[in-house]
Length: 214
Length: 312
Picture 1 (spheres, rainbow over the protein chains, first blue to last red):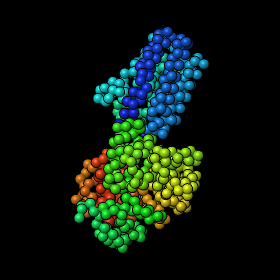
Picture 2: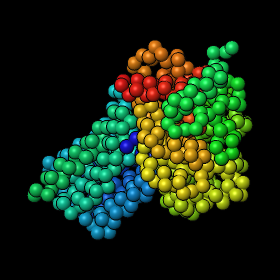
Picture 3: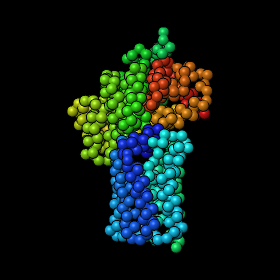
Picture 4: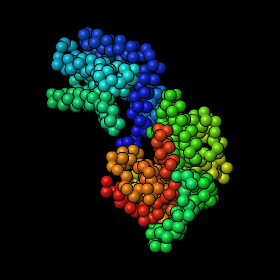
């Protein structure tokens, strides 16, 4: 595994500080889009589902383009293919949720919706909180919807917010990415970066188990 | 006489004794020491050109991206490397921004004298490989690259053809192939037997000694220079041994600390041309470079060293 990580943890962490500074105020814009997801949940229905799909797609495409290809590729040869996979995931999400209209936001306050909202909240606060409590520079925190780990968690959260299991195939890439992300953080002994992909994997597994059982 | 000077007569004497006693593992003679009065240099068999026995790897350590502070810190490491007589710097397009950061450092230092540039081509595509080779010249900021290697034997047939053409054109001085982590030794052996190459690069250290059985003797037989990567198993070997005391007899091997102990074990092998430890710290660079100064272990001592490290 260490052969796939050609950089040291401090260089990797420092890269996020430069990325966050270079793309400011993208992280603030992403938080506003996150708030818009809550509006979609409140309204429910097919139109809200289209908006939700577009927001999640935008996060994938932005992170693929600006982070993976624009920033991470300086350190890791694998970032370019990762970036295109992120962009492809964004395209598929947009196509599935808008053109095919398969994102139908669940109406009312169900357990699944509650979990989805909690996951969105964790995508916003978990990494900055870990960064703060582990006394690392806060500017190195992974932003909501602008970093790969948070984007993957948001994508899983979005699937908690929509009806049925037809969209579960969209979990494939977030699960694969989170497994890679978790293994990378573990290999680098970068413990701050472990909980987010671990949570994404757990949440995705639980969602699949619940929806398939129905 | 300086503590750092090499006791050349003793080294050659013990080497000859080792060979006479059949301890040389089939090697005809131990390498002679020459060039600078203080540092161990070894000949590239195909040309007899001598290079310092300790070079520098760039895996992870020089992949710092666009961070100027870290780039400047690596330039300090580079400056110390040259100051202490370093020559070979080894990199690869696989190492992210490492080639670019080396080029940045060379440009900032304003020097390439003494440099023995070594990099790699690493792609399954022959056409892309040509582009990668051109990129390396641009990133290093040099007109000639001393050694171009096919990384991990990837598409080696086609890339060797390309590299031979570049060598004929005078842009490259030597060509070679690489492996690491003890993998693909069978493939490397076959290429060494059938192709005309100048260098091989492989993993060899006090605990990873598979190369001793076939590859190192074959390199000596075929006149191929040997670069040893992962001398510290990235950092795990040095981290492990440093929690133990040096053996009391380490001074007899010319080693005053663990880096010297581990590196002297490698570069004292008669078939080895150069070891390439990587570091991001100036003080570690100093320790590494000191390993090519002073007394070198003979074959009997090398065996003792390997056994000691293996038992830790």
